[in-house]
Image (cartoon, rainbow, N blue to C red; front, side, top):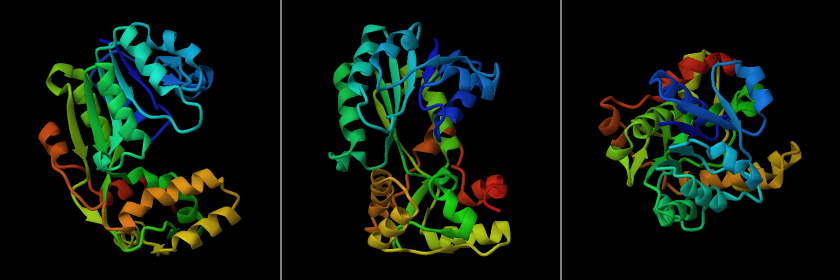
Length: 281
């Protein structure tokens, strides 16, 4: 068994690699720039070059691989279907694909199409349909939190089911190390409670002992402000789009699949903020 971890530099990929390493499962971490990854992580992980926009990197990356933690890469001209086809040809026997909660109701998004594609390819799969990552607080929400001590997203008063990427990684590692038990199954991974961003701001204020506010901008105000900051239009639209289901009250569902798989309760956002509070101070 050797696992290929894609999305290593993203919110979940690194955590999956850590969990697999803890389990002493052989793995390779896929990155675009191997030398840069080695410089940053030294000999902690084995790296292999993979660029989803360059199909000539697929064959070598898939050599000797039995299972894949697969994330859909952002960007244009991604040869995702070609990658899955080559995985079949190379004898990959299990894909754990990171999808999104409620994907079955959203046929217009990439994840819906990718789940269909993986099923059609015939590779045994495990789909992890994740809620809203807590890690977004130190990703695209970071700058406004750091500079202005505010959460600035057009999510209205809606609640969302925050989930820690470390919990996603835990389920992924369990599924990857027990492919027969988890093959051809879907798991919805959320946190233990749904919160609105006013509540998140309050918790951050309490944990960090500073005042954090939720601005609750309109979609138009959000886009205008982000444009004035020089952000790319496609990025702005993606971030706005992520929060529309929350604004409409459609993102608050909680699921206990995490507890079924791991035997414990999922992490809560207070603990996450406690773990990383130095990031925003």
